[in-house]
Every structure is written in C-alpha cells, then in structure tokens.
Image (cartoon, rainbow, N blue to C red; front, side, top):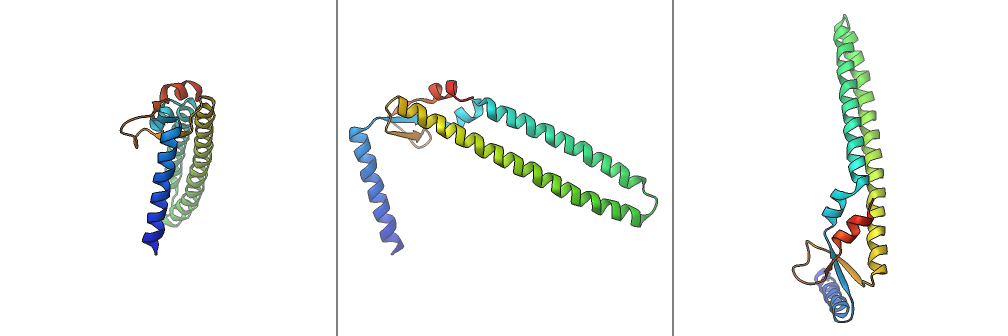
Length: 146
C-alpha cells in the first residue's frame, strides 16, 4: 500500500514537473551561497560567538569560586548550583539562536519567492538538485538579501 501511494506521488510530481518545464520558467539558486553572504547570518554568527565567549568567561569565574571553597561539601554544593545555571544559560542561548535562525530562513525564503515572482518564474529549484537547465538567480538574490 505504501509503495502504491509513493509511486502515485512520484508520478504526480513528474507530471507537474514536466508541465512546468513545458510551459513554465524555472530558476535555480544556490541557497547555501545566498545564506553564507547574508548580513543577517553573519551578524547572528558574530552574536553567537560573543555569547559563547561570555559563557566561557562565566564558567571560568564559577570554577574559581568553586575552587575557593574550604570544604568538599561546599565545593559540591556550589558546583551543583553552577551546573544548573549553566544548563539554563545554554538552553536560553540555543533557543534564542534557533528562533533567530528560523526568522532569517523565513526572510530569505520570502525574498527568493518575491524576486522569483517579480521575474516571472514559475518554479525555483535548489542548484544542488539541478544538473542542467534553468536560470541561475543566485547573484540577483544575494544582492537583495540583507
């Protein structure tokens, strides 16, 4: 049953693809190149590096505090407290990064869609999938993406 459904989907996909190729205008884009040139992505990477450096500095200070403790029990208690704080900080940083990355992804996708429609393209395909054909709009999109 699954094979039948999968086969039907593949056939439908080929039919749509053939219809677009016969009548439509197709663009190809190197999404990775667009993402790597994006100022938003560069700013996010820089922000992430800064947060990681701040966290490393915080961990170093925490370790120094733990080492200053006179008793083993005091060291263990403080280390446990710092471990919990570290986990929260790491989770917050990861969540913030994920949210910002999703927003950037959405922005880039919307920019590609808007530009492709403005140029009259019916379909945009990732360059890694296409061996031959289609108009490469990567450079145009790189100019527009911020």
